[in-house]
Every structure is written in structure tokens, then in C-alpha cells.
Amino acid sequence: MLFSLPPDDSHTPLYMQITRHLKQQIRTGALPAHAKLPSKRSLAEHLGVSVTTVESAYSQLVSEGFVESRPKRGFFVCEIEPLLPAAAEPVRPAAKADGTAAPLVDFSPGGIDTRHFPYTTWRRLLRACFDEADATLLQNAPAQGLVSLRESIAQYLAQARGVRCRAQQIVLGAGTEHLLQILSYMLDSSWTIALENPVYNKAYHMFSRMGHSVLPLYVDEKGLPVSPLGALSHAAVYTTPSHQFPLGVSMPISRRVQLLNWAKSAPDRYIIEDDYDSEFRYDAKPLPSLQSIDDHGRVIYLGTFSKSIAPSLRIGYMVLPPSLLPLYQAQYAQFSCAVSRFEQQVLDAFLRQGAFETHLNRMRKLYKEKRKTLVSALEAAFPHSLQYQGEQAGHHVLVHLPGMPDGGALCRTAMAAGVKVYPLSPYFIGPVPPAYQGHVLLGYGSLSQAQIQQGVLLLSQAWAPFIA
Image (tube, rainbow, N blue to C red; front, side, top):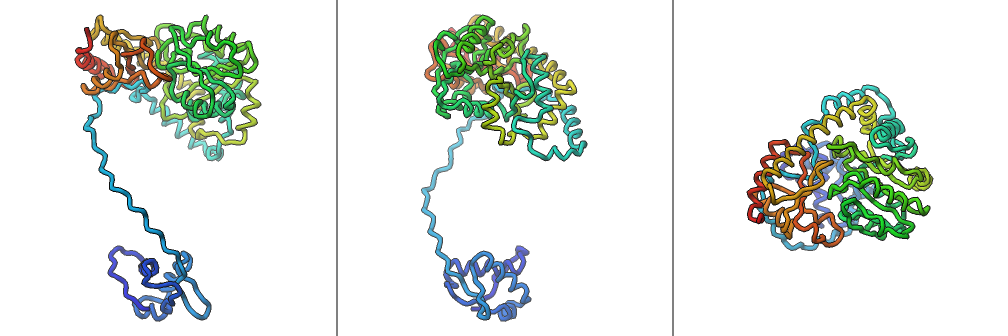
């Protein structure tokens, strides 16, 4: 059966036009199974193309299974089972836009100041890594991360946080969530995990989804309480003692010692210390990390560069006590590191050359000024009607309007005025206690001082009806 090609202005090669036409004829049944195709020469003469063009088209059809070549007989259509028609899906109405405009001021508690990122230094280090022409740059890093970077981190932690460890104890991962996932596999589901309440909710979801029995403990003015742990064994406690997230409480040394004493009193107890925001404490020196005063190897120490450098730099670190190293190596030594070797080498140079310390000191001063601006603006706008806490460290404060029963209402009213603030309720496991009704989070890391002042002014106007 000879045919003519429909006009084609797409500059598609002729053999592909022939292939496409014949496939369509086969799919629709116009060319039934076992039908013989025209010879290459006769079809070429009919279409006014070369025999080579037709041969290329037939070869493509054979390779795709539409046609088979039978020696000395020619080309025949293969038997192909027809595709079942797709089930008709109901037409869904387009999602209705809510018309909500982007906020004028976003007090995100996770924001950082990107305007002062050390772009020049980072760019120089990037080029230097490329210029070394080191073939290992293109290879996977060891499971625990580059030894040189782990050595740099060990040195930094010893100086800044008093952490006592060797590079062999450090495991690098793609952020805190990834490291918590590793821990949740190491400490299998038979382990009980005690958590602060409220808590960094990704930690709660990670452990609960892995099948762990989760014990939430309401935080008091000193942080995570120790007495409810009692005789609990085969258990680990997740805590953020330096700057409890999200309440901003710092655990005093007396409570830290209590917690360590609980952990060392049985061999199957560990403390997971997430040293969140420890780099940014403004009015006093940071309290020692739990790991630095742990003489019995009961603390698993977690840290990250997401706040101190950038969230997109997905590099976190975990310091394992010697007793857990064999367990980690048995389960994870065969895996590749989840962090890019290239980023690890750049970060290593950033630490070794002292650029990180310089950057951290600059950012600490900058965030201290922003915090001062926020606190001053809140005190001026709400002289007797608003309370706040957690301002001693980190990038956010917890704000409370006494007598206000619903933090969600504060968030909605603020958003209507062009300001985004964040509720406390998502961080609680279970209902929000009465003592924490009417609380919201205000982060200031990503905002300029002018934006902070503008945001507080708008809040004072939006929240005026709630103030007695």
C-alpha cells in the first residue's frame, strides 16, 4: 500500500516523517497486523526520495517493534496489542486564588541575613578548589565525610563549644534532619525517645514515623525536666539546651548536670544534644555544651552551618560517643556521604583560613543590633501590654499578649495588615497548654532594621483591638 506524506514545515528529516506516518497507520489499524509494506525501492520512487531514506525509516520501525523483516519476503506489520483507553477523569475546577498578597514584612524565625553573606571570599574559595585540578574532587566522599573537614570541625568545636572529640567521631550529613534519620535507624524502634515539648517538629516526626515510642515532656523555665525520665531505660533524650526551640529557654548548669547524671546511671541511656543557635548569644558567654561536661560518653552532639552560613549549605555534623561508633560503622560504613565533596572542600577551606570566625563575629554583631531594634520597637509600641522572651540568643523572640486566647487570631490579624508572624501551636505535641495561648514567634534574622521597625508599627495597629 503506497501513500503520500502530509505537508511538513517542521524541518523534520524525511525518514522520521515516514516513520511517524507509518506508526500512526499501524496504531489506528489502517495498517493491520501482518500487512506487507511496500518494497523500499517502490516506496522511494513513489515518494521521490532515496532508497536510503526509506531504509532508515524501516530500520527505525523494526527497532521499535512496529515492523519485522522477513528474509526474501519483505517487511510486515507486527501484531501489537492495542492500548487501553485512559479512564476519563472528572474535570476539576481550577484552584481558586485566595488573593492573599505577599506580606510586606515576614518575621520568619528561620530567616538569616543573606545581604551580608561573604560572597567574595566564598567565590575565591570556589575558584581555588577548581584550580587545584584534583581528580578526587569528582569522587564520592567517605561515608563520614572528608577527614580534613572533620578535623577542622573538631578544632572549631573544641574552641567554640568545648566539645571534646576526634575527627573519627564526627559524621557529616545533609542537615540536622538527615542526621536524625541516621540516629533513628541506629537506635532502632525498641528505643524510647523523650522530647522537649514544644519541640523542633521535624525531630518529633522523624522519630515517631520510624516507630519509636515518643515521650513528650513539657518544657519549664529551665528547659527539659529531668524528673519525669525516672527509671526510663533503653532511651534517648532529644534536647536543645543552649537556646530551646521555639521557647528560647537556656538550660542552666544545674539542670544540665541533672540530665547528665540521669544518662550515666544506666548503660542504655543517651542524650541527643542539638546545639541549636549556640553561636548567637548576645549578653553573656554561651553556657558550656552538655558534651563538654560529659565524662561518661552519654551525649550525641548535633550541629549545623545553616544559621551561621546559609540554609542552602546542607552540611550538618554529629559527634558520636565512642560507644556508638561501632554501631554506626556496622550500619553505615558502606554508604556514600550525602554531602557534596565539592561543598565539603570549600567549607573546609573557609574554616581553616579563619574566614568562618571572621564571618561569625560580623554576623553576631549584626544580629545583636537587629535584636536591639526589635526589642526597642516592641517596648515602644506595646509599653504595658506585651511580654517577650528568648531574646538572649538566636534569631527570634517569643511574644505574648496576656489575655489573648488564640495565637492563630494574632497571626491572621497581622497577615491582614501585611505582616507575617508565626504561631507556636505547630511545635507542640498535643494541645497548646493554657500558659502558652496567645503566643507568636517573631524572627528578625532576614529583616533590615527599617523592616523590623515597619513591621512592629503595623503590628501595633493591627493588634490594637486585642489590647485592654
